[in-house]
Length: 254
Ligand SMILES: NC(=O)c1ccc[n+]([C@@H]2O[C@H](COP(=O)([O-])OP(=O)(O)OC[C@H]3O[C@@H](n4cnc5c(N)ncnc54)[C@H](OP(=O)(O)O)[C@@H]3O)[C@@H](O)[C@H]2O)c1
Image 1 (cartoon, rainbow, N blue to C red):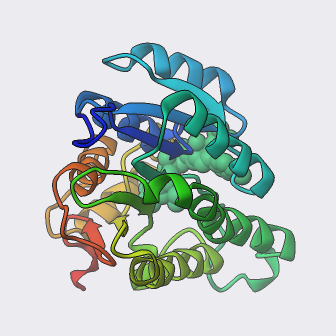
Image 2 (tube, rainbow, N blue to C red; image 1 turned 180 degrees about the vertical axis):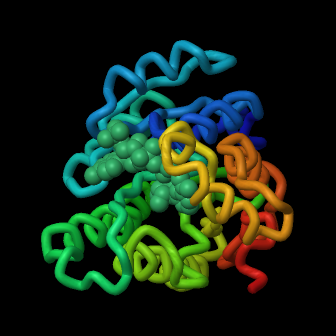
């Protein structure tokens, strides 16, 4: 996939790119012909291994701690220098931990700060750092930001109260930024319910079955389906911005 004016191959940066969902997103983007920068925090080795498996060439693994705004600015500078631009930013980095919603004491300040600093501030900081590059994109529809949200932000059911709140905040930010950054940059949330990553597969089977039973389409999403949705937003849905795109098999229909 090339940008029309410059004939440069389109470039996507994926934070949390070596994670369960991030690696499927990177694979789908590479299959669609983009050059992919796999952003990692702790998983440097997994990110490097992923790069080796991606189809096409020009992919790279780079540190992208979203809680470190200076590191994000440095990443944007290195991507601009090495690739000549950036067309898509996928904010996939995220953290959580299971805490019963009624157990307020276990949701301590440290966990709250970590969730908000990564899932909300981190996504914003990445957009702030990459805005100058994204504004110059000549992709049809312009530069694009995809925020990995969650049905938890809509139905307030999920791993803990603050995780749900963080994804609601992310969706709200998607709308503000879509308005603020138009017409040069589109901003879209992709919002899955539970996704059957290796981690989720390791959780209690009865609980997973219950989640599937509550889903009109009767199963969980695959990481590949989420990757396909992100890729569609970037390559195909060129008149879509400020939208929360549910990829949840109808889980949020109630
Ligand atoms: N799994 C689900 O059912 C589900 C459902 C809806 C939405 N989501 C969302 O999808 C996204 C990916 O989740 P996942 O299931 O793939 O989880 P995962 O496998 O745990 O991946 C999380 C990723 O976030 C990265 N990360 C964490 N803290 C970071 C930081 N400070 N800076 C940069 N990167 C950081 C990790 O990078 P390193 O490993 O390099 O440290 C990792 O790649 C998250 O935003 C999550 O909220 C997941």
